[in-house]
Amino acid sequence: MRRRKSSAASGSGESRTAPTTAPMTCSDTQLQDEIRRRLAECARTPDPHEATLEHLDTRNVDICVEGGKVILTGTVAERRMKHRIEELVDACPGVQDIDNQIRVQV
Image 1 (cartoon, rainbow, N blue to C red):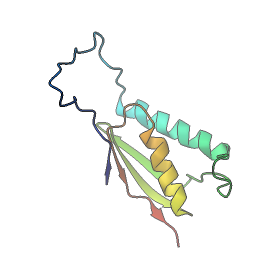
Image 2 (spheres, rainbow, N blue to C red; image 1 turned 90 degrees about the vertical axis):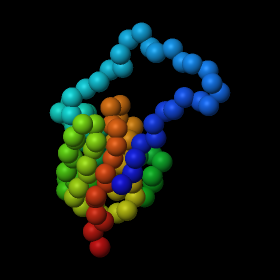
Image 3 (tube, rainbow, N blue to C red; image 1 turned 30 degrees about the vertical axis):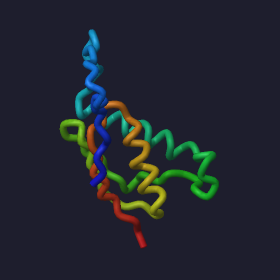
Image 4 (cartoon, rainbow, N blue to C red; image 1 turned 180 degrees about the horizontal axis):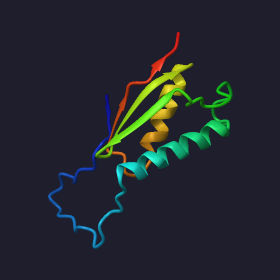
């Protein structure tokens, strides 16, 4: 299981002022929809940095979100697809934790 790093105050003894507005939060359903949208967009558009990875096949990947924790299950053809999916999910605002249970087909 991969956990996102939480931001912690520096040990310098300085106090930090809380922001005046609450951070934007979204429901698990909204977060799941955003993750699906990002994965679908990536599946349609080849990654220019991954010349050998023509597209990201997420047809056999399931996404479950509970309290900001994203659980990924299913199968992909290549290990780098598994890691790329996790990177895309990690980049979504609101994701607190990722449990990547995706398996690579052999």
